[in-house]
Length: 134
Image (cartoon, rainbow, N blue to C red):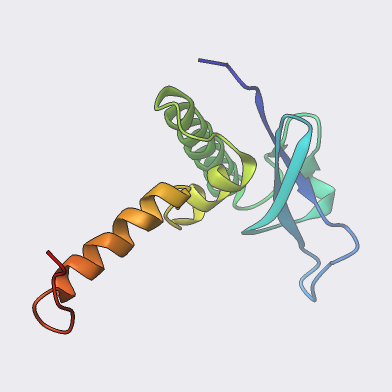
C-alpha cells in the first residue's frame, strides 16, 4: 500500500465580496501535486479570517459555527482518502472529491467484462429470437 499525502487548505476569494461584505470560503485539496478547488458554501468576513491558522478568529459573531464546519470538512475528506487507500482502490483526486459530494465512484471496466455482458445478453435471446446452432 502506497501512502499518499493529502493536503487540505481553505482559502477565501477576496475578489468575490458579496453585498454583506463576506467572501466565499473555498476548499483546496492537493494530492500528488494535483489540485482540486471547490466552494464550501460558507461565507467569511475577510477581516476576521486567519490564513495561517485556517480559522475565523473570535471577533466574528458566528466563528464557532464556521470553524466547526471547517473541521468537519477536513475530517470527512481525510477519512475518505484513508478509506480509499486502505481498500486499495484508485485513490485519485477526482475519486476523493466525488466521494465527498456523494457521487458513486465508477469502477473501470475492461474489454473482457464487456464481452461477458454481451454473451449474457445473447444467451438470454437463445430460444426467443435466436436459434441454437448445436
